[in-house]
Image (cartoon, rainbow, N blue to C red; front, side):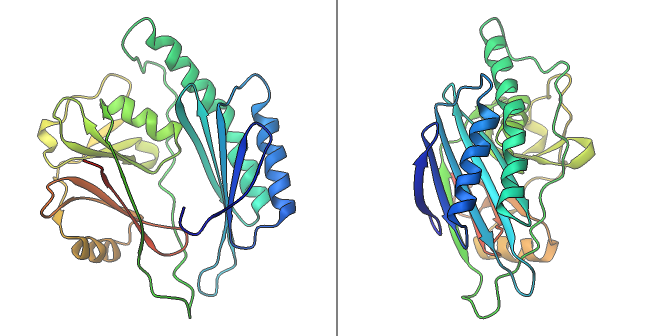
Length: 266
């Protein structure tokens, strides 16, 4: 995992990976905090915690805590940023139990019928901002991570639920009605938006899902064009269709000021 190093394994089979000036006291605090929040009847098959401290330009350090829980074979995740590792870990750990319980409700409901989102409490937060630029004197900004994975075939409601359970700002998936690479992303108070190459072909979202389909198709861009478009727009991420591949992709800003790319594995 680029930039991270594994430091320990402890309570509840918890892997801890760190980068930057994270202390052993920070690690011990986070291990205890996460274990305490998950202890009240919330089983976790595996826990992975990532702790990082980022510096950018003349700004003060930003600490990030990400907690990944494997529960019933599904991933539940929480990620928070704060001025200290402890504060970020507190917020991330506090968010986990409600997400695990939400997953449990849907798993139980799936035994008796198709997914229903009636009365669902959606997480209408905005996408995270990334204020840091690459620190002066360091290597220039670059594309430092490329993640490729098989896309899940989902309806818009299930994709939005995945976004919430994993605390993502965007999620690249295959929209089941049209079979096209589609991105669901956060739109604040209005809920979620869908970006697709052919918006008119996207299936109608089920009742109770606050999803709006972007009228404009995802732009078709080369990677250098996508980088320039991301910079010009000043946005945290950019869904686009890759020239030559015809597949959906998302270019995004990272906490360290560099860029990441998400694409389908095949």
